Every structure is written in C-alpha cells, then in structure tokens.
Amino acid sequence: MLGLYTQYVSGKSSQIQYGDFEFTTDMSYDDLISILCVQQVFTKTIQVTFPEGSTAVAIAQLMEQNGLCTVDEFLACANGEDGSDWSQYEFWNLIPDNKRLMKCEGYLFPDTYEFYVGDDVYNYVDKFYKEFDSKVDGLMMDIDDSSYSLDDIVILASFIQEEAGKKEEDAKVSAVFHNRLESTDPLWASHILQSNTCSYIMQDNENNYLWNSPTAEYLGYREKGEIPAEVLEVYDTYKVSGLPAGPVSNPGYDAIYAALYPDQTYINEGYYFFVTGHPDTDVAGQYFYAKTAEEHQKNVEMAGWA
Image (cartoon, rainbow, N blue to C red; front, side, top):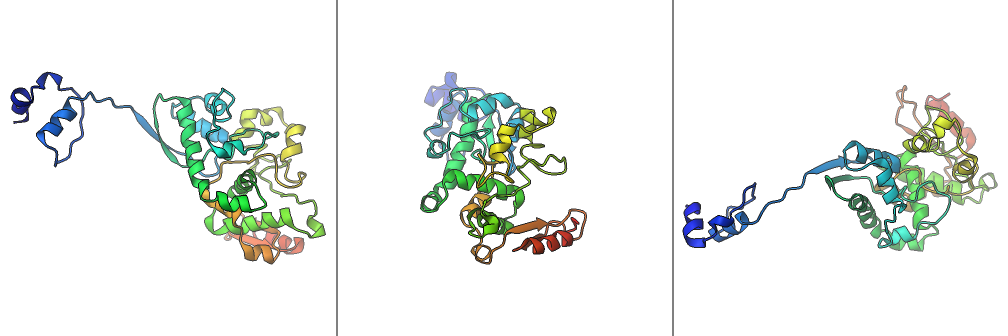
C-alpha cells in the first residue's frame, strides 16, 4: 500500500533512500515518505566509563584503548597545549598558572560518556569539561563565600577521593584535612596535609601520584628512579604548607561536595587522623578516626597495620 502511495500519489518514488529508519505508529503516510526520502547517515559511537579518581593520564589511556585518540593528543588538547581554547568555561580561567603537572588534572569529570568514533579530539575533551561545569555550577555561590577557591576545593576533593572515595566517609576525611589545614593548634602550625597519595614515599604498595600512578609512569619518574626535586617542592604533602600545586586525580561529585562541606562535628571535636583497616583483616575497609597521635597509633594497631 505504501509503495503504491509513493508511486502514484506522492510522486516521490525516485527519492526513496536505502538504509535503516525509525518510525512511530502514529505517523501518517506523508510523514513516512518524508523520512524515507532523507538519506540516513549513521555514525558509530562507543560508550566508555571513567572511574572516579582516575588521573588525567589514565583517562587519556582509556581514550586510546578505545581507539578514539592517542594519549598525547588527548592531553595536549585537554591542557590547551595544542592551541585549544577552553576560556568559555569560567572554571578554566580560575585555574592558577603555577607549577602543577597538568592543568586539566581534576577537571576531567569522571562519568560514562558516549563518543562518536572519528570525532575531533576537542569534542571529546569538551564532554568532560561541559559535565564538570554543569556539576559545580550549583556549588559556586557557596565556594565564592568560603575561604577556599574552586581550585582549592578540587585539589582537596582529589585527596578525599583517593583517601576515602566512599560517600559515608568523604565528609569525615574532609574534616580531618580541613583541621590539618586550618588548625590554630601549635602542633599543626605548619598546616601540612600529610597524605601518602602524593609524597616523597616511593613504595610500590603505596598509591602515590608521584611514584606509581599512570601520571608518574607517563612522566617517567619510575624509570628515572626518583621524583624530581622541583616536583616534590610543590607536591610533597609532608613538606608543602597547605595544599599542593594541583589535584592528584579527577574526583567525583561526592568528593567535591565533601571538600566544600566537611563533617562539622568532626571539625569541632578536633579529629586529625584516620586509618583504614588492613585488607587482610576482618576490619578491612573500616575507618578509624583519632584526635591525637597516641589515639591514632592505637587505631593503626586495631586496623592491622602494626
């Protein structure tokens, strides 16, 4: 019936295209003919999931593994090193021009994305930045009213993501870090973060951004057998007063939220330490918080680390 209608009524039989088409049951013959006369161009897509806490290099590696672009192409674009302009995003303009390893680190929002195969690298990166911009938009008013900049919040969130990464623990870990950074206690006058995830500690069993992360591998630190002094100078959380030069991963929304809104009770009560249960014990994954070094040492023993 449709064929006869096309040939004798609509007069568009010569315009019918080959391909796959999508229709709905309420379409008229004219609607169907209009769709059939438009050439269908289908572009292959691929869906990729980026875990929270992935480094920029790890994200670039996933892009390469899925055949979308090379690691170098992605990072050059994301860092604006290939001439890519990201100034349309206000957060980009707020990132300090300091000695951080990568400007994009912390701002490539981890999520599941669908990409067009063969698309421009700029469009790939833009998906991450557009999502980050959308996620933090509702927090900007409170960030502006706080004593922390957006970059401070993202840096702190990256440590919370690495040290906690659990919604129920994020705000408590955040409170510990806030206390270390803000305390008037003489014992914490240096305001050092003291996180093994970014320090001089060069042990394979420690998750360390500067030593055994995809970023450290990409920059060749393991191959060189040492972390450059100029990097430690701005990233070693056992020496740097305050926050390091940049984030150590790309945190998810919960970690960003916790960085801005730490657990107020844990701040008021003065918690400065935490440790997680050893993976080979029956307290694996549990968090133990302490106010003093003595209490912390007992927790370390309870957690199975001593």
